[in-house]
Amino acid sequence: MLPSVMPMTDNEQVTNTAVTNTEETSTEVTSAKMSSAELASEQTLDASAVFIGLVNPKTPVNVGGIMRASGCYGVDGVFYTGRRYELAARSGAVQYHVDTKDAGERIPLTGVTSLLASIPADTKLICVDLVVGATPLPDFVHPAKAFYVFGPEDGTIGQEIIDKADAVVYVPTVGCMNLAASVNVLLYDRLAKSHREAASLTSSLVTSLSGDALIRQSRDNNNRTRVKVPRAPRKPRHVKSSTVEPSCSDNAIVITAA
Image (tube, rainbow, N blue to C red; front, side):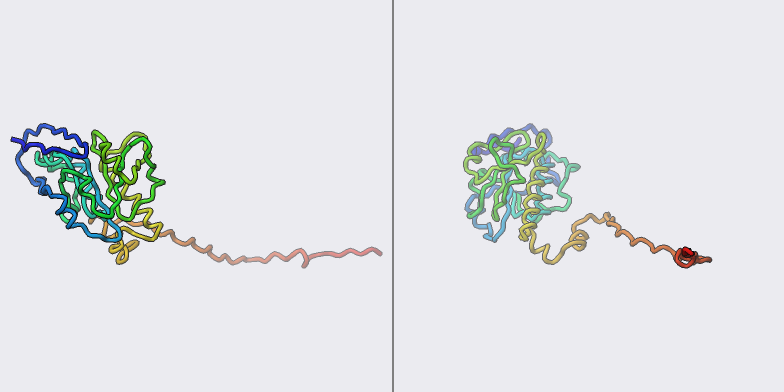
């Protein structure tokens, strides 16, 4: 028997899909529901903090991709509502494992009943979705502490959350990207802009590693390619001349009038 669906808040509707195989596998969800008080007590008040909120995500592929992106871009925690992800993860699709860097082992992935109640103190709520009136991402200035909320794969963010947001932004594309791709673009935009302002989100890593050292640590083990340094042009060989042509002044004939 499938577990019962918990009542949702934030105007988030849950659409559970039937699961024929409920046998737990290596993709079993281990994150437990936590109260808002417990979450608030565990949040640190650093100068910069990044959190991701997912409204009723649907597939383990997207959640796994988001966890991998969170590891790459220094996210502090990921929260989600709904039961669809949990049920799908228990169905045993091991071949769709996306978080190959196992970022989920060090970044908490927490199921909650309300994203609004999970926002840490002194943190801005930023909704990211194709919402009329939203700010294009290239023009957006990211706050130091942000809680980015993304809508589900087959829906949008509830109006109640939109109304509470400090800002609503969208990624200007032709059509819509999938959920994990949207999170990747948002996090990269934040990182790129922070570098231009000399305020890296991953300061602890960048201060110790940069350039080629950072690339070597981040790349896959089977990646050994490099950019070839162009060689300086060879100097032309010196050719000795066998004869020297006299200059015009040497052979000039001067004719004077009588």
